[in-house]
Length: 319
Image (cartoon, rainbow, N blue to C red):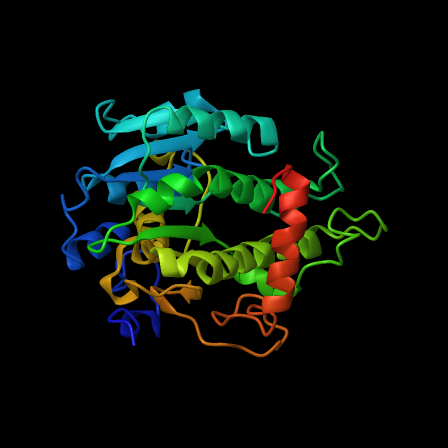
């Protein structure tokens, strides 16, 4: 059982006994310990992305940070941005071409990556919207963009793995994955109609879980592990516009992300769905979409393999 299980049993709100992201870094003894290693984080212009960056900055890692709006990201990260250790890269996750360019930019500066945090995402778009490739927007932004990004950075992640710290991919899913699984291969983008914003969100978040599971299955033997998770409290807007209580809530909200990224309890093992800084229990489909448990469909090797194969085709890659 995780050392952080007890404080999550009866949460009292922002600032309670639950750990913050920075506390995880300190508890794990990682302050300044990742100097010389590279971490990549997507979606750093607001909310949990900022708190994730703050905590990872304390590890000493060199950070490559992506955002659709660079000006917004620069303003949000102004208090911690250090050009010598952080590089901002523009990436619009609704555009596969933008993802490719961002990956090329990063790989032109480093050949070894030890950590990829897939943080960016959108939620419950009210009407069916398609990208220029005909992909449903939530599925494209939350899943396909990160799938392509991972595959383009994969060689660097494998090269960056070491016996002391095996490379990790941390994918922010959501308790919302419990609402439903993935569609059939001919209906990922609601080609057959009946679009529902929450069902589409659930599909994209289940896809996040499946991607992490399949990464683990394919690459664990090469020292590359992956985790999906439900993050904690989230909020929008630049940190300077939030109250101190909201900022504390965000710091606690990013704790599970940082736990997945560096926890020694997880070293050498992945393919896990995490919640509240620990491995989540397997749950039944009980009608509670915000349950901390994973859904019954969360671990499904056949659908995971099917999604991987279909995703390769959608982003124009071969296996």
